[in-house]
Amino acid sequence: MFGLGTPELIVILGIAFLVFGGKKLPEIGSGLGKALTSFKKGIDGVEEEGKEIINDIPGIKEAAEVKEKIDQVKNLGKVSNILK
Image 1 (tube, one colour):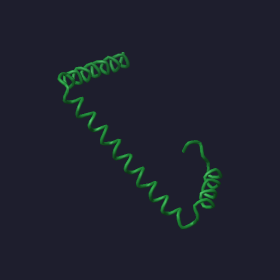
Image 2 (tube, rainbow, N blue to C red):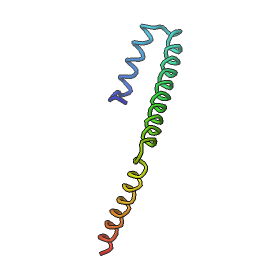
Image 3 (cartoon, rainbow, N blue to C red):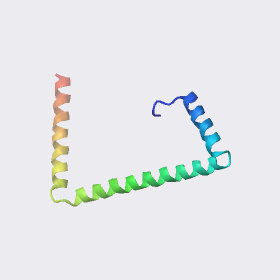
Image 4 (cartoon, rainbow, N blue to C red):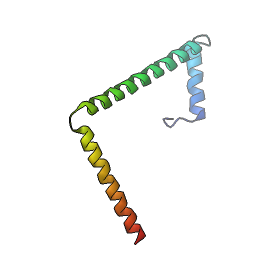
């Protein structure tokens, strides 16, 4: 996780304890967890909207189907080369 080991995390938590105190740390942790959850939900929503927009563009579905067929033919070619 970002190149932080156990000793570094212990030092960071110790400094946070000294700065914020023992009563505030659970509140800060809870708030941070809620913020990360909210951020992840927002990112997931944006990704889904992007997929919906792409699917609504004319020709995208057809292009995806053609690409899938090309990939299948490529895979068949690889299998036939292996079997030779």
